[in-house]
Image 1 (tube, rainbow, N blue to C red):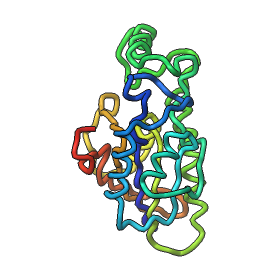
Image 2 (cartoon, helix red, strand yellow; image 1 turned 60 degrees about the vertical axis):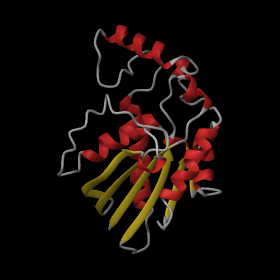
Image 3 (tube, one colour; image 1 turned 135 degrees about the vertical axis):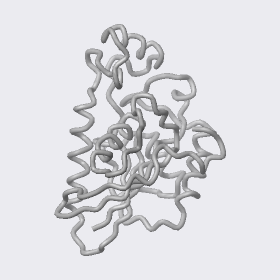
Image 4 (cartoon, rainbow, N blue to C red; image 1 turned 180 degrees about the horizontal axis):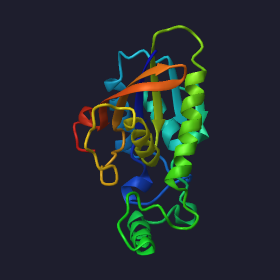
Length: 214
């Protein structure tokens, strides 16, 4: 079975515009976030999605609505952003600098402060969701198109996970790749018995449909 996975980051929020960490907190979309989400919907027109998933956080749900879907097959809390604990609502720059001081180095993802959800825990959430999704494909349709609206931290983990199955290395340093609001990543998966046989990374963190840099 071929599974084409379209992964979209939510639109810009007021917290994004101020450079503030959100985590499991929420913030409404800006006017730019609303317009860019609508443009993302136009870029995805013509694709017949068999299933649509979204994080249950408001900014992801609002983005999905602007893309053109009034609801999802499931709003899943496992697709949420990283939980930043007490750092939620604080400036990203302060968090990043504190993480570097805590580590004594500039490590891959910086997320090592007490109370902050680790990459391993994010991967556990994603893996549970993803393999459950594959097992629930019960019909014999040979191709599936899947739309997922989620968050930057989760998209980074999804990309890292799926790139393991690609025979074509991208040469990306995921620690330093920007994942812009409304960016689209596409992964074409060959799946057998709920196992990934191969992953073709079609594009990652793409913003060409927005007529602006991510």
